[in-house]
Each structure stands twice: as C-alpha cells, then as structure tokens.
Length: 222
Image (cartoon, rainbow, N blue to C red; front, side):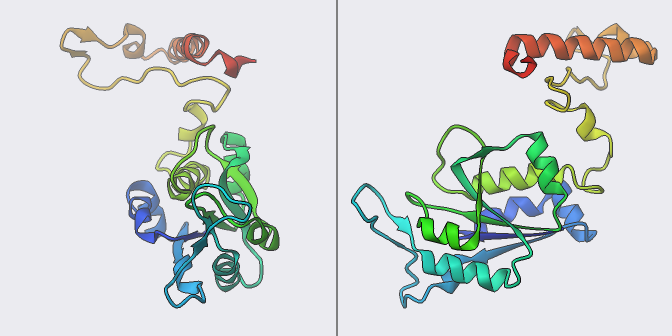
C-alpha cells in the first residue's frame, strides 16, 4: 500500500514512521510519503492561504497549491483521495477496514479555517472525520486515520488476530488485560485467567466486555 500525505507541515509526521508502522515500512508492506504543499504554490513568498470571501475569521487555504500538489503526486488519479474534515463521515472500524483494502490513499490535511471548496471538488476528495471536535489542523487527524486503517493491513501487526479481540471489534469494549506478576502490590490477577481453562477464560472475557460496554458505552449496544 502507498499512502501520500499532503500537508503544510510534513515534519509533524515523524512519529508515524516509528513502532509497528515503521517496521511495516522497512519490510515493504506500506510506503508513506509526506508532500509539502508549499512547494507547489506559484506565490514567490510560498503563500498558501488568503482571507475568505464573504468575510469571517481566519484564513482559507488556496486552491492552486493543493490542486497542483495532487496532480503532481497522483497524476493518473489512482489514489483514493481523503480530506480530513469535521464535516466528513466519522471514522470507525468498518471504514478503516474499507480503506485498508485500497492500494493507494492520498490524505489532504487542511489548516487555518479550511480549504477552498473548489480544490476539494476538482480533485474529488471525500471527507473523513475522527470525531465531533475541531483540531488546529488535519495532520493529527490524518495520523490517527492512517494508524487505525493500517492495523487492518495484513502483516502490519505482529499478531494477525489482534484486531479481532480489541475494543469495538464486535460492538464491545475490550476486556481487562493482565500479565506477570500474578500479584502486584496486593492486587491479584483474576483466578480464571490462571486456570488454563480456555472456555471459562473466553466466557469471563465476554462478560467483562459486556459489563464495561454497558457502563461506559451503552450506545455501542444499540
């Protein structure tokens, strides 16, 4: 899979190349590239924003640098193009799995008060949100979306079954996890987890997931 990220701040994505995703890059499973939108502006001062028509606070990203950047990075239009925006569909495991099937993805990170709508329309961007709140830019949102979807790409995670047992995988929050030692500061690991009885362990984990979901996220059970 190839992922291109169009941004005004490419240095923000250094953490994305660490840990499991970094190892997936080294093994050739995924190729992530950040492209600086400023390099595509025709303004001699590298300006990429201007005041909004109709008035209002803040600045709006210009269409020209974005459109030219997209055409440079994806000239044949092979990538599925995604604009991180509070107006978009809210990211969930189903959307993440859908995106994980793509061979190429292109993420646009907005900044300031937004992006000129003509750039989105000309380039055919779909909009994607990570929640009902507003960030200072789309960079953090893009990193979240990419991290989530790459977990569903075969070979990225060390354990192929990890995504099947974590929170939200079956409409439930994940059960509590424990490791060594069996007793820590007087607190013991639940006895059932030490029993070796797989059916009882599975039943306990299911019950814990259901209790946690009912208490913290009852909306998931609707």
